[in-house]
Image (cartoon, rainbow, N blue to C red; front, side):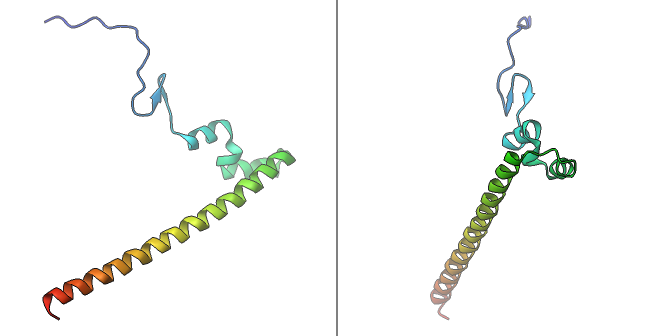
Length: 102
């Protein structure tokens, strides 16, 4: 059997790849295009050399505050879900104990 001839089509987008590039999402974009927002070591270096504008510092302060609030909210949701799971487990254990006749 003869193999089909290879075509010169552009690469197909499969599994996060577009045009042969590896796309890592928001984190990759920020690291490549906006390193001050994603790389704290780069930010420290730029701050030490007074290379960060005041507008960028305002943006970083706002984003930092929002991230702290979002992290706190996420922790509260996780704790609430843990308490809900424990209450459900307690209810199911009581149900099993009643069925066993204890």
